[in-house]
Amino acid sequence: MRLPLAALIVCAQGAAAQVSFEDRSAGLPEHIYSGGWEHFVGGGVAVFDCDGDDLPDLFAAGGQSPAKLMRNAGDFRFEAAAVPELTGVTGAYPLDMDSDGRMDLFVLRVGPNVVLRGTGDCGFDDVTKTWGIPAGERWSTAFTAWWKAQDERPHLAVGNYVDRDDPNGPFEACDDNTLLTPTVQGYRATDLKPGHCALSMLAAQDAWGELRLRVSNDRHYYVSGGKEQMWDVATGRFLTPSDGWPDLSVWGMGIASRDITGDGRDEVVLTSMGDQLLQLAGSGGYRAAPFDIGTYAHRPHVGGDGRPSTGWHAEFGDVDNDGRADLFIAKGNVDQMPGMATRDPNNLLMQQPSGVFVEAAAKAGVATMARARGAALADFDGDGRLDLVVMNRRAPMELYRNVTQDTGNWVKIKLAQRGGNRNAVGARVDVVVGDTRQSMQKLVGGGHAGGQAVPLHFGLGQGVGAQVVVRWPDGTLTAQAVKAGQTVTIKHEN
Image (tube, rainbow, N blue to C red; front, side, top):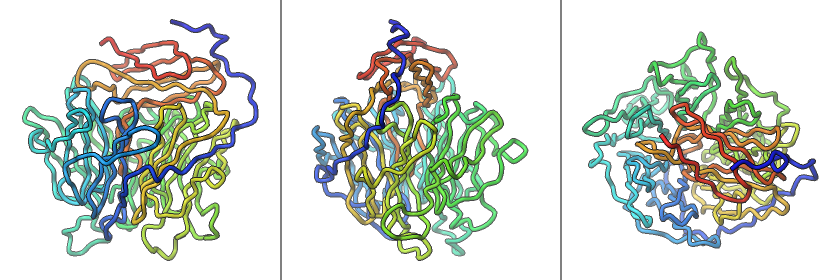
């Protein structure tokens, strides 16, 4: 089916909707990410559908407390569900590792990591040993995954923080990261080094169009000699300035990746202490966005604390469905760092037609002052508007329903293909409305200690439909016209 071109055009722009969220935190089971210095970082949340009802469920890290699985019962009510008891959890990422149509969880911990296999109806079994996955004993704080051509199982990368066994630590005692490669017997672990205290990792197509592993590192502990890293999957080496990858050191906490210019290359936000760095992608690589783009969010926007901010989870999402990706950043002091703001509200940065981002968190009702860590933008009630969940350190989780009036239209895209990479991780989806193009990759990783496995959400503005083009991981293309207001599954007949 192809919609007529006239049905795809966006109407003339009117006034932007006033973004508004309603606090529905009372609908969550009681849960707090707790613990000492090993849980100053982490505190992620995994968002995925574990029972097949098309409502996203939650798996929340607990730190010193047990992690908790929360089943979405509808109407913003979540119920605690049974899950193997795990403490020391810093975060988790959902992915279908065995391609059985049910989401599994790679659970990051201070100590041995755990893989939980989804068994249906929100049931999970610990299959770490059964699947031959080296669990390690490290302090794991980052994760990403990708598939190579024809592989039945994913390649995995685990980011590790400070080496707790180093007697000269914690400063200049960053641990090596870990690559987990599928073998006949299970997985083989090899060190990816040097490690510079990773807090976020993302395997994705980069500005040059290559599959590469980006690692964002915390200079608070590597102190000197460390930097942000980009590892080339094909050649197995780190890029250098001679490759167009300049040396850059930040207090790296999280990664957000999405094309916001419409050229098919993903821009990247790196959260940090102080500036939240937006890197614009071009044919020559990456360059820092101009300061007046509005995303640097280097100091609190309300609350009266003028010291620098500390950013953690960052995520792009079209909150008002106007066809432009907005940006949420979770903020919060590490603990009581005196040089950084302790009243540090989260950011909700709304992208304008000019490409500039404008702060809206306070008016929207999400500029809370708890020490935020992980977060997610997801449609928890199926109404086509992105809602928000926020994880806090030593404070209760927060849940917000998007009640913005007069939002634009939307479409959600699911991908399916045969073989091991069932959900087509690594595919790129373009959505075209008139002469406006949006582009998003299907990825596992990034954020801060948590990720999503839900349909890709696109705002369409006033468009009543769109042309969708999927570039599958094998390079082939599928084009399909879709109508607004529905979730569409596009299948690769490979």
